[in-house]
Length: 336
Image 1: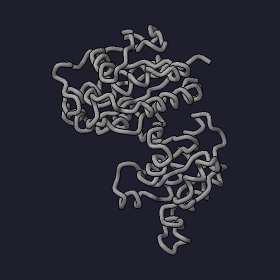
Image 2: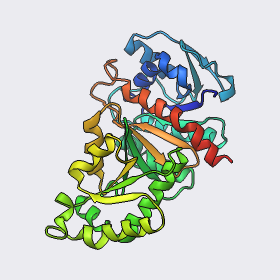
Image 3: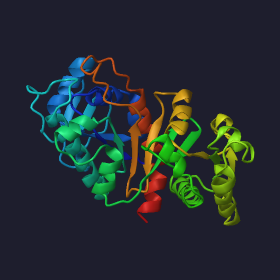
Image 4: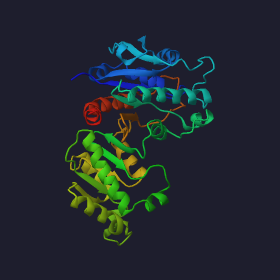
């Protein structure tokens, strides 16, 4: 099987994105499984190599077909959109927010044209985006708008553990209000469908409990009885392999051990804590329901260490590896 081309927009120029890209692309492992293509700025790549003490060739390309895709050479679509003399490493600035958005926009364009097989994104900064008057608070909202996609579905993966999220960036109080029969059922179906697109057939899904011990049949919290259990029963009647609610203090452990193919987490931190405790650096985010496969590192711009060469590339390598792992099945389903 040919190696998939993975587009890598290099993130906020003032953060660690350029450094983790350079470090990741110094890895033979990455080139054994993929053809990484960076969308960014040549001066930033050169600067990042100096920060990291790495010396690689830069091959400027206008089209993914022009890439060499061999270790020792970084294939780059150069947008030439950063004044390196004015860039302040580790600081919020409009120029950096604008550049980060342009890298993503270009990556989306070539992904929509089916010239690359997946996108693995690097960190961007919400405040830099705001300074540049970019009307999005993060990657998901950007991708949703640029692809005209509604309600993308986030999945985290680390080792054997896959976690979907019923709610994202809302307060815990609001998250509880969003745990309804209709919403839980919808996300069970969407999670099953997303797993099938990734090549995981006949998946067994566990729904996490909301309350301690899943409410002990209504003794302390009735969301399980009134909302979650009826949603699971409805999905089961339609032939979906779903169980639960399984108490949140054990469901992620059993999924990691292979008892379930995925877990539906009911709120943001419930699933984030579980995955990051397994391995913080190797936790990868996957955005489902887009026209293309997108993975991402699960950390921020780390302005405090940007420019030092200290940033770990482990999460970037994992994001590329996961993109390469699922790209064939995803594209086979979506490009038929």
